[in-house]
Amino acid sequence: MENKSFTETKVSSEVIFEGHIVKLERDVVTLPNGKETTREVIRHKGAACVVPLMDDYKVVVVRQFRYPFGKVLTEIPAGKMDEGEEPHECALRELKEETGIIPEKLVYIGDLYPSPAYDDEVIHMYIAMDLKFVEPKLDADEFLEVVQMPYQDLKRDVIIGEICDAKTQAAFLKTDYMLFHQKKK
Amino acid sequence: MENKSFTETKVSSEVIFEGHIVKLERDVVTLPNGKETTREVIRHKGAACVVPLMDDYKVVVVRQFRYPFGKVLTEIPAGKMDEGEEPHECALRELKEETGIIPEKLVYIGDLYPSPAYDDEVIHMYIAMDLKFVEPKLDADEFLEVVQMPYQDLKRDVIIGEICDAKTQAAFLKTDYMLFHQKKK
Figure 1: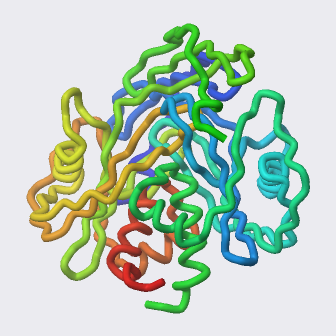
Figure 2: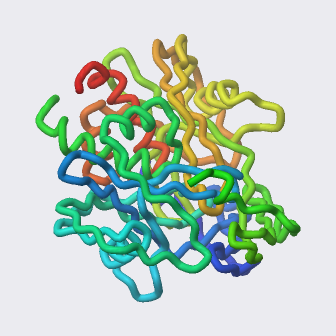
């Protein structure tokens, strides 16, 4: 089956809402069978996330209240891209702001699409190594706790599903594969 | 730092939009420092996804056009939960509808929060094994291609970032860990 036979073509587009985080569009599209339908799409500026790996194999994570879930979640440092910012610049900025870390090495490990059915967000994933620590610079309304988590504890929490955040699961498991399983079949 | 010190308290909530997929709310909340701010939240019904693993170590994936990205993506079978449906029922229904697979074994491997900063979606993840194949039953307006992908090809595409879908990355890498790396330190 050719890719083009799946293609949906935009007929019209309407911005329903534009907020601080979320821009919501409702588009009318033509389906491959010629019928029209609507697609609700969240447009997002993109983001970057970082697995900060210390020399003694601790991973620096952040704990913050996530309003949609009404609870504190453990995640790797991450944040939205500013206007005109490159993904690696965003990764370095967010890492420094949230945790005070300045890494010597930043390695790109791929992109993540959190919800491709209805959201165009792309999270650019990195590993940071050879870390120096300075004072974090949080926004006035940002509340988070920085935790140095032993590697095997983080791995356990990802595997047993104690940590559910998608970018943390994907970026950590990719990191683990790259560090320890690369040469195994 | 106590968890409760992070807590944001809802002051008011307004439904901005309620569509087929996306329900968008804008809530006013009180921050830990007493200041008020707004939170934009996508409310989602939840979903399930499945890694269907064949006896010969092929994984059954689906390729479909994803409108937010304007291209065909490769993903594991998945879908939204119907009203009153349990996660494992959703997993079995979507797997059968999209691929025609009826599994003998369905193993829960944890939850995934795709975008916890602004979206309450939870994807319940499963591995399916001992697969029987019947005829898929797609919705009239659903277009997808079912592909039996060799395990190592899928692993390569996840690791090199050719496959970016978050649920596919997380569920496949967890599956891989459980199958092959469980006993290694």
